[in-house]
Length: 385
Image (cartoon, rainbow, N blue to C red; front, side):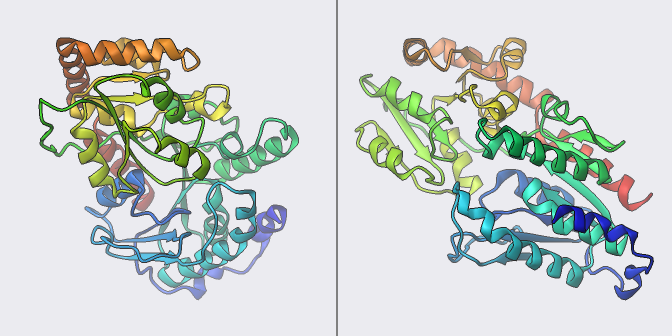
């Protein structure tokens, strides 16, 4: 299928003559409902300051989506489809056809495709109508979704992903480590980290309540939440607040039986940030036996810095050492994780010092304002070339 589409550029007819003037400057494409995606919301907010936008996503749960005021032109594909299951691949052709149809209608000058599962119709649109393409890679697809035992399939997916990346006008990734996994890439590559915006959220946590940890993200094993719940289940004066989409229902049912774990639902990004702001520490753990987790630079790392709260983590050790904003632990050492939690619970001065170091680094370097300037430079280059 991919080979057939790659031959579109051999057609001699100038199909762009069939398209009138663009209705928008940029179309941003993501394979989720978008309103719960913090990175996409920030990209939309930044680009809308200078350009007209259309934002296209997939409402896989086919449920009413509220609070879309941040999106002037939001289109959602309302076909119900599973999360985290192999059968999802059967639904993609319908989604891709819908995306291509929408792109032809809104006629953007640049298409901003987020991850491999959206780029195919965007690349076809680029070829046929001679427009620009930004490939924004949040995660390498094979690393994130294909088990290691299927090495041949992983190799094929990686080749397709890199071939499409090299044919895009700009490749964006979330970290230098992730960018270096691409053997083939275009001339113009940039890193836009998952830093949060700078607006303040006031802390309202009572000083008399329990020591509170927070986890906001996908509820599934290998994201560290199972390690956190195991570590705190017998600890006194410790509470874990959890928010996010439930992928592993069996684990969720098991987790919520613990009296010191409280589930807050699937929250909008601004509500998730408020939950984080009013906690004492953030635990950021990833199973490094999964290849994709070795290249993770999670939002939560920078969000902890923003709110001046310490973190307990097994990733981004070089940043933890540089900033001195948290405690490093081994993912597989439950006692080490538990000891780190107890240390922060019992030592308020340590919490304040680590949190202040993180906040200082956020203000100076790791904030969305800096990322926004880089994003504007990318689009100035594309739209004024």
